[in-house]
Image (cartoon, rainbow, N blue to C red; front, side, top):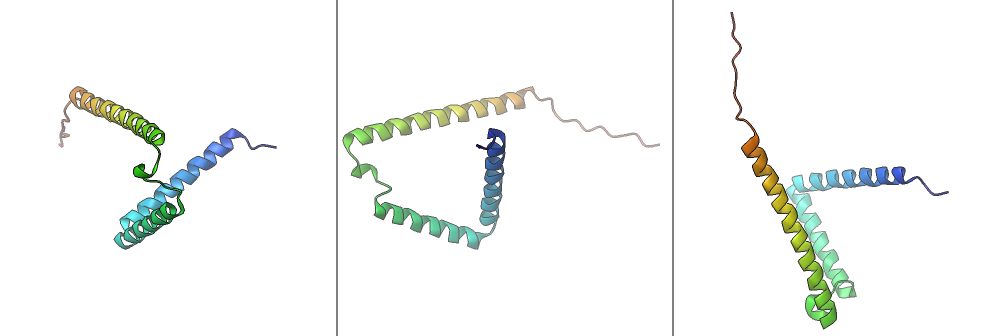
Length: 107
């Protein structure tokens, strides 16, 4: 019997949170961070050597066109989202009243 979708989503979210905390912990320690970056670099070179990762110059013209179109779409959506966040932040700054500190009267 298949597991309920709610449980799967909950487990995935817990896993994401756990991984996020682990990455924050690694980033906080400079030595661990450098070691992790080095391991990731080595993993990238190994995958490139195995042919799992191809550079843009190593693919056909049709594949280049498809990849560049995909990159363009990603960039467009990224910039649109960034613009929306910036506008929302600016609107909040404009519409938020200034902070005033009131002193309580002491007798």
